[in-house]
Structure formats: C-alpha cells, structure tokens
Length: 393
Ligand SMILES: NC(=O)C1=CN([C@@H]2O[C@H](COP(=O)(O)OP(=O)(O)OC[C@H]3O[C@@H](n4cnc5c(N)ncnc54)[C@H](O)[C@@H]3O)[C@@H](O)[C@H]2O)C=CC1
Ligand SMILES: CC(=O)[C@H](N)C(=O)O
Image 1 (cartoon, rainbow, N blue to C red):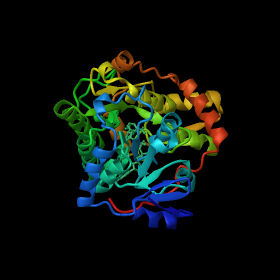
Image 2 (image 1 turned 90 degrees about the horizontal axis):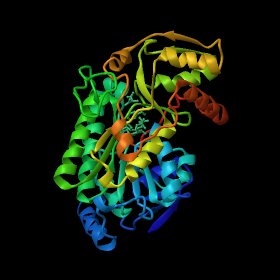
Image 3 (image 1 turned 180 degrees about the vertical axis):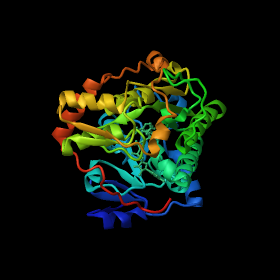
C-alpha cells in the first residue's frame, strides 16, 4: 500500500481517483491504483483465497470478534450516528464510511472514509474486495419529499443503487442491511396499528422504490440464502444530524426554529399524526437487529415504532417545556399529500417478540426534553448548510 497525507479537500479529491481508504490524515491506496474490469475480477479471487471464508448466514456478530462493515450514505441523518455506534463496538478501522457527499475534515478524522457513488458498481465492488467486507449497511437513498421533486434521481439511487449493492452482497455472500420506511405503505393500507403484512400500494416514488427493495431482498434471501435484513422506520428525530429531504423533517426543524425564533411554520397540518422515533432508539434497535442470530428472525422485514404525534401535539410539548410563548403556524405544502397516505401508527409487536425491540423514548414529553438538552449542549450548526458532491447521479 502507498499512502498520501491528506490536508484538505483538494488532496482528498486527488486521492479519490486512487480509490484509497482515508484514515487519521493518511489516504492509503493500492499500488495498482485502479482496480477496474479484469483487475476487479482478479481481486475477487484474492478475496476468497486470502481471507477467511465468509458466509453471511453463519456470521454471528455478537460472538464474532469484529465484522468489517461498509456503510453507504454514511453522511446522512442516520449514517453519522450509526457509524459512531458501530465504531465504538466493532473498532474504528472496521467500519468504513462512504458517501457521494464530500465529508468535513472532522468526519475524515473520525475513521476510514471512501467516496462512493452507489451507482458505480465497480467502485463498490473494489471497496468490498479490498477491505474484505463482511456486512454492508446500505443507507444511501433519496427520501420522500426530495423523491417527489426528483423522481428520476430517486429511481436511480433507490433502485439501481440498491440493485448494485444487493448483487454484490450475493456475489460475496455478505450480510446486507437496508432500511425501509413507513412510506412503503400507501392510502389503501390500514392506517392505525399497521401490521407487518398488509396492503402495500404506496403512491410516492420513494415508497415504490422501498417496496421494490424489500421484495428483492426477500427474493435473494429465499433464492440465494442471502442474509438480507430490513426495518420499516417511522420518522426519525435527531439532535446531532440534520434530516435529508423527508416528509417528517418538520419534527426536527421545529426544535431548531424554537431555539432560533421561538416560532415555527409547519408544512404539515396541525392534526397530521405520524409514527416517529428518537434517533438513539433507532440506532440501538438497528444494531440489535443486525446482530440478532438468524434463527431468532421469523421474517426479513419488520415494522418498528416508538410514538405517534401531530405538529400541534409536538408544539404543545414545546410550549410546556421550552416556552409558553412558542408560536406555531400551519402552511401545508406538497408534503401534506405524502403524509396523508402514510400510517398513523405501526404494529411492531413481532419485532418486540422476535429480537426484543424496546425503544426508550415513547412520549412527546420525553422526546422534547431530550431534544432540547442535546441541542442546547451541542449548539448544532444550521440545518441549511449546503453540501458539495463528487459527481453527478
Ligand atoms: N431519516 C428518517 O426519518 C428515515 C430514514 N429511512 C431510511 O434510512 C436510510 C437513511 O436515511 P437518512 O440518513 O435519513 O437519509 P439522508 O438523506 O439523511 O442520507 C442519505 C445519504 O445518501 C447519500 N446519497 C445520495 N445519493 C447517493 C449516491 N448516488 N451514492 C452514494 N450516496 C448517496 C446522501 O449524500 C446522504 O448522505 C434511507 O434508506 C432512508 O430511506 C427510513 C425511514 C425514516
Ligand atoms: C419516514 C421516512 O421515510 C422519511 N423520514 C421521510 O419522511 O421521507
């Protein structure tokens, strides 16, 4: 391996073309520099001859020392928290973050990062082979609101990007986790206490791509024995990372707005009740699920749920704990039509039974309390900070 000390974004971009791994200020890359075409195929052989035999179905993460994990879309709302938690548990060097976005210097100094566009299958394959990856956590996606604005990109990233990862997980017999969403349900689904198995006819491009993802994962599990796992998340509320283009984003934005101006304009109507979850519960549940022994799982896709509230109920919680003068106004936009097709609550009793899912933040009061504690401690930067990308998609 050769190495290059990376001092700033220019160096990083130069290093990107070498497809190396960045860690602790040094970008390491193979002498051959470009593992494309035939070289990738040779690497595939090396993967099997030099490394331990990996069989995703037998990979017991709980007892297995340290799995090698590749996380796509790691710079998003969930990825930032998930790689932190995984690195604490599996070791910094064993969790490789990747994204199409350019990371901050702080992210780069936290652990290995490789720039990856999930539409570039060869590049993903090279990283899997070179890093001897055991588990892929595929978070790259275009969420519901952005998806309705850019359906062509949502289709490419959520369908073609997922297909690339799925096919590589099959080829190298990896464990694959990819989140689904309550947005995989649609207007003809029973909306209260929506069960795991029910009508799934979503009317957003995001929902359609997620149903595709779930069914393809189940198909690969059935046909090839791939250890595919997925959770249908509700809206995720976080203090330390910003959401990226979803319909539930209001429930994060409202806290920042309360701190800044003691008021908020909601893009959803006051009585639009949706399932939600605090980020830490989502991350803990996800780790628990990824680590659960195969024999405990009765299905590959599970609902998870923590609490339901409407914008009005959340605003009342903020008035009670933050400021009785907090003002909320309602100015619903195109996202209202998306929210109107989604469930009000999810039945996650099977997740609780099979792998003991047990979220801790279950009330608006406890959510509001923890959000303000965190936000005040962290003085989180603006939600609107623009991100640069490495290429087009
Ligand atoms: N945050 C939430 O409330 C929920 C999230 N989910 C799912 O969880 C997963 C992660 O979601 P978030 O972190 O919230 O999303 P996000 O939008 O915050 O992050 C997605 C990441 O994917 C990256 N990305 C986009 N196009 C890419 C490409 N071509 N190649 C590589 N990376 C690309 C983005 O740069 C971004 O960092 C997604 O699959 C999403 O559908 C599901 C339900 C709720
Ligand atoms: C529920 C989700 O999948 C996401 N937060 C979105 O609003 O798109």
